[in-house]
Image (cartoon, rainbow over the protein chains, first blue to last red):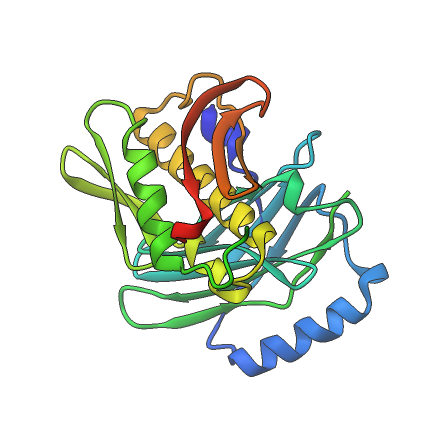
Length: 135
Length: 125
């Protein structure tokens, strides 16, 4: 039950073998069109090899979870941004999850994840362009 | 007085030391570079690289506070998931604030924390 409460389940989709440069360019374009971004209240991005979930609590804590469809082992690097400010970082050997304090996520700001995963067989994946508006 | 160039390694070291002193029995916390690693019965259960984000704005008190909150929150997740129960009890939010030359850190409400960790001198960061 704890995991369901704490781990939000909105993720950013993971796409296999997407170049970092391409993803960065797409993210910038997305951020320039913030009005078109979804709310972070409860959103999911689905890629061809994984999923990203984001959910915002009534207190405005933003929880996120990322999962690979096949292999959650290997090396994960997760960078978490709010309005392009880096607010969290994880480097670990299991799929990352976590939350951002409401003190670091004012209403109306853009929440974004940059995730890289190299699985146990060496396959590299990167998060699809993503971003959502903090409610 | 705020630090002019806080270091992720120094922040991780200070945080690991403070966190270690409040962890439940059987848990330990150590710094490894700019990360805080958590162990149970001597075995690693996870880590937070949040202290490394101060390197993106080393002269910013706000970034030190953000990195500290994120690290405390990650450790809280690791311990709670390992115990399969909220830790600290009630799962209070992690807090951090630079006041003067001190970085204060706690779980719960700032005015009445559930757990308060020993403050860190920002001059040591």
